[in-house]
Image (cartoon, rainbow, N blue to C red; front, side):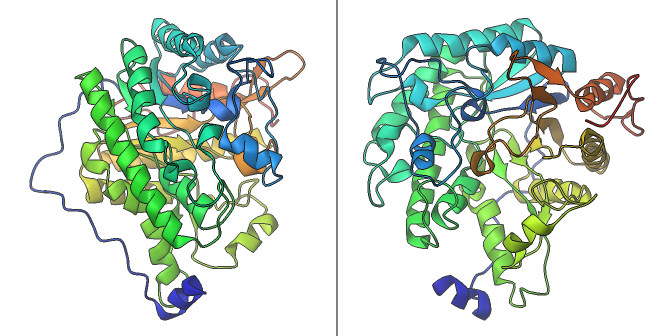
Length: 447
């Protein structure tokens, strides 16, 4: 009722801009050539790799949420990226990216409070080493939505708010960063914490499943911000030249007729920016994920299933490439730091549509660069079709299909398109050659 009253009265105000000295030049951060990348997550891709009942078997809050019937189950195997990482690596080499972002599963590393799976940590280190050896720079995400099951409790003291969180998070971060830092320079403390908080504490879609619990949301936000800043502190202590990368969820919101007071729009802008406003100062690079544009309308969620056609993804998300340009400019102006587009992709069964989507959005990155934005990289979501959270396996985002019988990653034409685009970019810092789509490989068909 409070939220509806605010929406009608307009009591929700825009997020105030953080204090940034815009008279100073952009920070000099050496990131090398333009980052052409692919992003993934641990939970969405990895098989469990542990026998049920073994000391190192583990569960996450998402496993428990699925067992309660709140989201589709992932199963124990996903796409076998834990047991068969070399297949992911081979696909990445064929695509030709120079960066790959992957996540560490906290529950796998620490299946019980204070007890670590050292073999699992060594395996993650080996993944980073293999990437480096292949000429692909690893970027490590320390938290990608999932918590160990031992941080789940009844009532409000769960996940971010669990009494053990402040004790165990710094220890986990310190252990992982110390092990990974010989091969990893860039770390992302958290992936889309703002999205997790909104979906978990406002819309009841994700764990812990609360609806319009704004007080709990605010408390969890404070803990998430603390965790991000603590992780940044630990990372810098472990590796002096480390780069701290934010990863925020940033759909682009347009003003709408059904939001006369602007309250809904302002609330969505607060969800987009409030967490980053409180953490950007400890970041070297401002990363954000952009997928779609949306209008502030309480009926939009109902419209998602009905949206079909050229201008919508399989999930009903509005395809609007120009909004990526506008979001880059907005983020640049707000934080005055180098930018990375850390995720961009589309759920579609039609690969021609994926090619069109990627090409049009990359053109907007090029346009932003030419207009003075300091964009350092672009990452496609994702390598292979996988478990897409509350959508289950019904949202194919991958540039490769997963053949469950053989375990192979079957590259789609969009992967070859991305390879051709990377190859055609002679001066990757300016993307000068990214103006016309490279020719499709022989036999290009829509899959």
